[in-house]
Length: 107
Length: 120
Image (cartoon, rainbow over the protein chains, first blue to last red):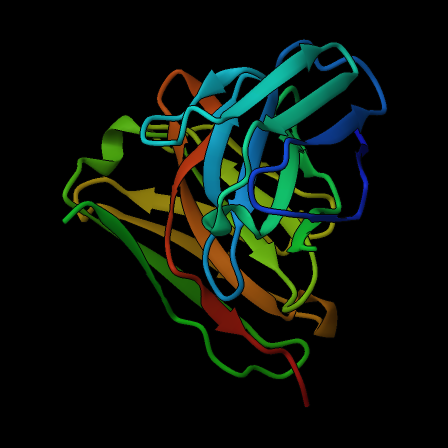
């Protein structure tokens, strides 16, 4: 099975900051990497699929990159609504797997 | 309104069974791969199972294989998860999710979740 490791586990930032979250797969997953945002008590929301494709309706300040085993999610200028937990997920092969999450908090 | 609504979550004893349902509205379920994902409150996400558009191909997490069965009734626009031999560690919020049409392992729409506590 493919293991997904995110870093950092938590991140403190301010409105307007640029932040990057990293996700590493235990083996190559090509570009089969997705990113989700989850707010407390809510279902996750798809942000990025196929490593770099922006899901419809998601703000353009969100972007994804990478291929193979190393991926990044970048938010170029944090807004108040961006403070949440972020998960990466591989869809290269079943069982699909998620990273452990990165909690983005206000500094 | 385009949405997924889960139901069927309930307190169940270890060894018991439960069937979850996920009703789709505002779109035709038959066009999409579907998934179940669960989350222990306060913890991370765990993919549980997936089913293709006609129900002939399914997949499961190792932790539930042989105990859980995913199915769908496209005529009723509903997805199911039959859970047998439930364990305390199956306690979680269960979400159904619709896949991106051209990327069947990416989850573009989620239900609100239904809680399944497994306890004696």
